[in-house]
Image 1 (cartoon, helix red, strand yellow):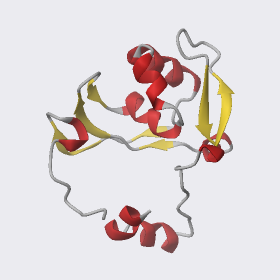
Image 2: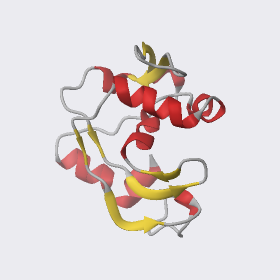
Image 3: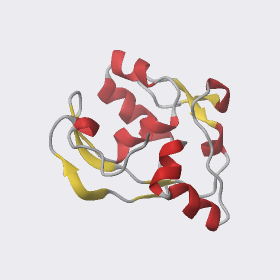
Length: 130
């Protein structure tokens, strides 16, 4: 939560009438079925995603050691609890399975500073989250 404060995101959200919600406890996640899943047949999804009218996905375009590149579908891993399961059980298929069951209303790709190597650790952060 400190990162949101340091970056100014927290203030912008509050000024717009929103609220910052944590995702650091399994209690925030509910098990849902992934009906067409081949490897991923269920997932624990953050409860706020289950009742929204509009779901906007904002991934950062970057390299990833397992999937080579991350964009919209890989970013959906951020709303599930056990991402490690995906990595241990055919990451690519799990990403596709989940994406088939919960599609964002809109995906806006942040490609301002594309990370071409080492994923999220590829560049020093522009703003300290500590």
